[in-house]
Amino acid sequence: MRSLLLLTNRHRAPSTNRAFGFLLAFNAGALNAGGFLVLHRYTSHMTGFASQLADAIVTGKTWLLLGALGAILAFMIGAATCAVLINLGRHYRLHSLYALPLLLEAALLLPFGLAGADTVKFMTPFAVPITVLLLSFMMGLQNAVASNSSKGSIRTTHMTGNLTDFGIELGKFLYWKSARSPRGDGVRHSTGRMGMTGGLMAMFILGGGIGALGFKYIGFICVVPLAALLLALAMPDVVRDVPWRRTSTPSKLFKSRT
Image (cartoon, rainbow, N blue to C red; front, top):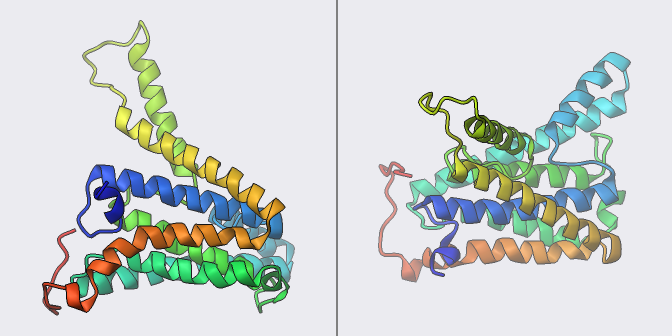
């Protein structure tokens, strides 16, 4: 139970990364699917936006080019912001190393949910509503959190890599089980990797279903529980870092061992 309350802690274990990844995948699926119902765009799908950018350049459609460029830049800025926050946490030797980006995401989600449809009406210079840029920023922020905390082994906002890894392990399993496979060739599937990627996909789909239902029947306010989930993940470690609970002092010479 204690490990579940410290999922954003600087000290990582495979089980911690797995639980953390599953919850973030659920959150990403809910935002992505729910946002599509409102915006008709999957804001975590940077492959699609990159293709849109290329198409817009060829066809000369400026509004498509601006929209794709805005989403891509917002996603990258979100990932860069995450890197800055994590490295600040390392510099000051915080327990809540991976909580800071989640706190920022929760802080952005709350006004987004409370403002509701008004956020869709506000257009940006990139020819898309501010909601598109905001969600793309949050997707980049969250994907970078999962990537940093797991040393690059977990992605939570898009499923292409997870589907690929699951397919590879499935192919190994089928090969190993086949009658023609020599047992001495060293080909064995990873049950742990299959469980991880399969679980991430399942949680993303589950979150997508709940997010779609929430946006359809409740509206923008349904993101408030998602913000509460992020706060619940972040706060236990943040509380450990308040000044009167800190036992260590900041060090400019500190180098992360995570």
